[in-house]
Amino acid sequence: MSGALKVVPVSFAQARQFIADHHRHHQPPQGHKYSVGVADAHGLAGVATVGRPVNRHLDNGTTLEVTRVATTGTANACSMLYGAAWRAARALGWQRLITYTQAGEPGTSLRAAGWRKVADRPPRASWSCPSRPRTTSAPHMVARTLWEVP
Image (tube, rainbow, N blue to C red; front, side, top):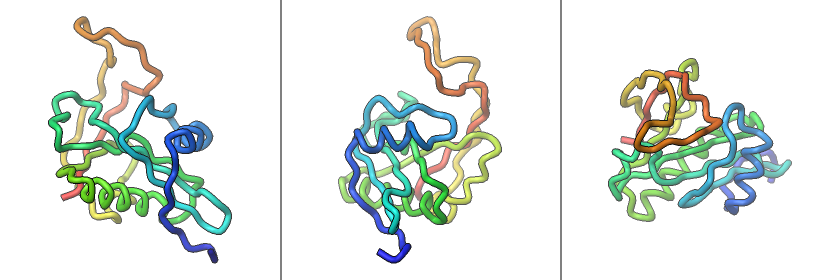
């Protein structure tokens, strides 16, 4: 391979380790439906994990969510991962794929991969609620943007 990126298979264990090593603000996810990777001549340059939507109201049996994308900073790796994630979802029969970006993240890679902005979401005070108490290390005091593939 001469520096060109290509989509490669990655195991969940490989994706989790890559995310632990390279993601800016999240820990690896606890589960997934599938993962995809991109590699160049130097090896693995990025991974994406896809799972059930975190928002239970969007978990309708036809929707999946890109829960993590992490790269080494290689040009075009993010947009290639978002495109590959959608092609895989569609091939498996899923009808919708969503993801979120944090406030301040422009979504350039998502737009380049053909995604569109759906909505802006305000920051949450916490993921915990009386009916579902929990702790998380995820940043929750941050506004988010919801994206989907049209």
